[in-house]
Length: 478
Image (cartoon, rainbow, N blue to C red):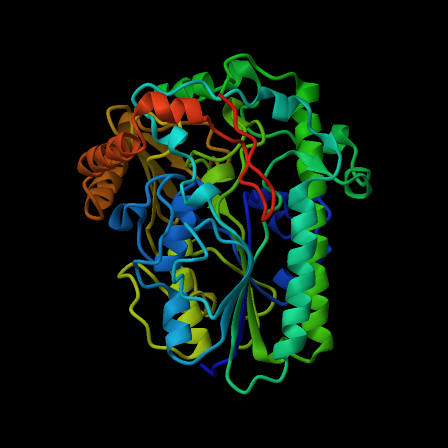
């Protein structure tokens, strides 16, 4: 494969079902849809952890969360593990970051040639409030959902600046002799659920699809999700109007994001770089939008654990849909192969370029969650048909994604699927010991809380809904 430039565009909290190329006929995403038309769309892509900091640390290092110990949003990446950025930079390539990283600090050696307007965790600490899992305090998030609507936000302002900077960067590096890598990391459509009026007004909330199991009577009664709803202040159901209004604002954010990406891709084309640049678009995790009674990420259901993944450029089949399960873990192989660098890759990582050029491959993908308001760890193992969600100390779940893509019917207690369930649990345990990892995560989190003066001190510090953009102060709550 010929070495080429690599433009990696990452968004934050983008549910894959809110893209036209993923089958949504209501959303307006012409630029990402066009990217899919001239490349390959991966229909079964997953995060390694459905929350920001662990997913981004895993993406950087090419390792599972339990292998690096970045358990939650209070355990940010700190430069101590080698990343794909280090490998490219140390092999003489320019590899720059524009936008959100959610690492500990720009003062760490994060492996980039340069970081432009980076967004890192608050005070180099992040959110230890969310590491209190043994007796978590309710996080009152209702107002942010109820108040969704047409408005500007610092996140939208920041992403305009990120697109501006990317355009400027491409102009400066258009004639580089050696292939470069640019990591362009947007923060939208991450909440707040506010979209500028010009995007909000493109939609009618009554026309937008509602998520699976949004009605209280349809909520899954599994103890893990009852716990989530309790501690995310979601026991009381939102009205249909409130849910629709939140979805409406989110769709506006998605269209806003698509337009910023379109601006960057247009510049790439005008500079004559399209034929010499591979472009990968993805997100760190999805968004629930009221599915199962939950907003945000945090679960392994498709709307949260599933992610968009689109690859285009040299050697990538055009107009192709790859049904092989893939993961953020595969980004390392993809970048190394694409740029022409030999780097160490995870035993479970494969190049997306390679997979795009092959018929559907039988494959397992793994993810895990040990973070905010989860009583116990949860794990994902999915293959080409079935999905296992394994909960420590609680019943496992099993879904047939071919017959039940909305994950309504839990098959774990059905006798005819016992062999499938047991086989998937066995394969999961070949990757890690779920109970042992859960105990390690909780021990590390307890030690972290103690290092900050104990539970009372952390609770007094409070929590914040959204990490502030550079120059903005966090708004703490208790």
